[in-house]
Image 1: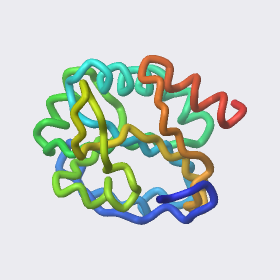
Image 2: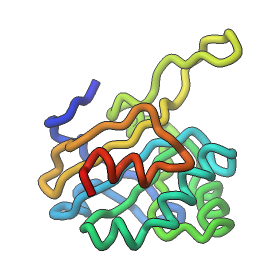
Image 3: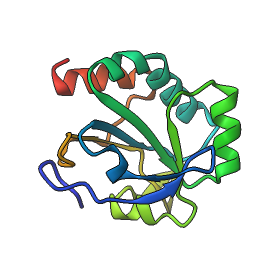
Length: 152
């Protein structure tokens, strides 16, 4: 499991436009890297819209926002278009990025145990080091959560 102070694993994936994205593409910038279970679901939509509504705030602080889920490029494209999202959504259909970040694991819902994506946000500094990890994400107020952790 990754921890604060660890080097963030580099990754390669494709965004909603079919463009290849590597974490290293954003070297020198701070990154809000958030993992979410599924496009167009209530919690994931609330989280994406909250981050998008505050995108200028993050950009002014030197951040890039990147969302990652197991959904396809096409699903991400529809989701980004529907909600006019202004940041990259990376398709991780083989879950390799999710697993590298430890955001795949055992979940429990309605008494059933299963494997799934663990909603997690990583704040990564300009040198690629993890500044903070949020595992109890408040989807409707995620910006406020991030600001509080970073003292913004």
